[in-house]
Length: 293
Ligand SMILES: [Zn+2]
Image (cartoon, rainbow, N blue to C red; front, side):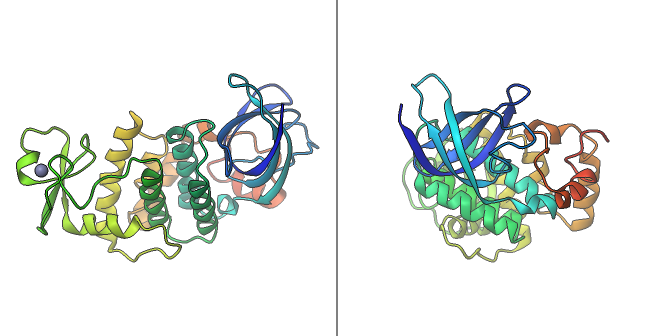
């Protein structure tokens, strides 16, 4: 059994026993892997905070046969996801990215470009750049990288050009825009503004600088993508309800967030935060992380 070395983002953690956990890691060179992390839950674990959710680490693991979990032997922290202590919208955006990577990529299917995009997006979330724009850019480029990019320029069914018009039809099932003829008789077709189509094109470029798009257009695009992603995944992403608030005015968003803090939504993606430092604990206790309120 070979020992492998690569960079990884922790996208899911499930407790396995009193001392161990199973981590799902999205790695640069091996794609998604599932690894047993023995002793990770002990107070003075050698893994420390290197495999907390959304951290980026340099890892060494033993690649097991196809059916068994890999075994993580070393993890050196490269970057923590600091946004968790500063902003709920940024934190939820980070969770959503983890959920998409976990759901839409296959185990052992490497996508170094997608790893770089995820890494860059997490860093930009940490810098508190606009979470809505960051998530949209991530989604559209992720879809392209896994071969599921929606078609924007030509009719998905007949290949005909789509001329500029106030509203265009977007087929959720066909995976792109539809011309007037082809849209007849199709189900799950939504109407969206031309601006949304233009914004989709802008965000599909994997550029570090985010495009500046009218907030109303961003909100409409969020709605289109919510449906598209749910269709792709065969279910509503768990974090989508929370994401929907990113595009709304701050007061509505904050009211909704405080309501959601009282729900159980938050628990499903979390592990015990035993390895966080004191700074984190202060913030965590009065936000979504606390399991007791
Ligand atoms: Zn057509």
